[in-house]
Image 1 (cartoon, rainbow, N blue to C red):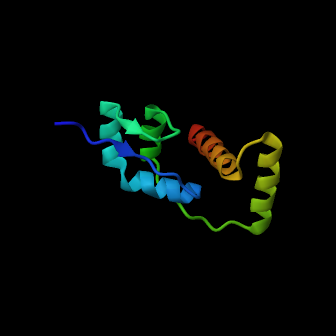
Image 2 (tube, rainbow, N blue to C red):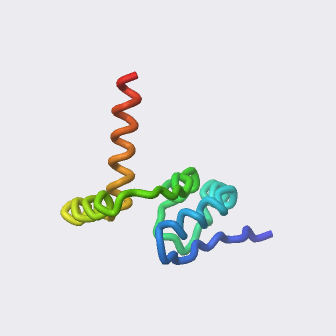
Image 3 (cartoon, helix red, strand yellow):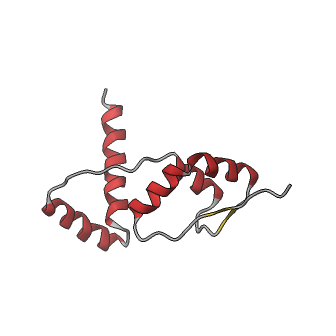
Length: 98
C-alpha cells in the first residue's frame, strides 16, 4: 500500500503557519520519520522543530512593536523572529542567574 504524502500548504501569515503545524504535529512527525513531506520550504528537521512550537498571542505596546520592527529591518530579519530571539536570550540569561 503506498504511503500517503503530507502536503504543506502556503500560508498567508506566520500565525496561520504555526496553527497548521500545531494541528498537524503527529502527521508531521510521522512524515519526518518516513521522509515523505512534500511542498514545504522547510527541511524535515525544521518541520519537526516547528511542530514542537506553540502559537502565542501577546499584547505589546505599539511603540515596542514599532521599535522591534525598525531594529529587525536594520538586521534584515522579520520583527517576530527578532522578538523571539530577544525572548530566547532573556530567558536563557535569567535561567543562568538562578
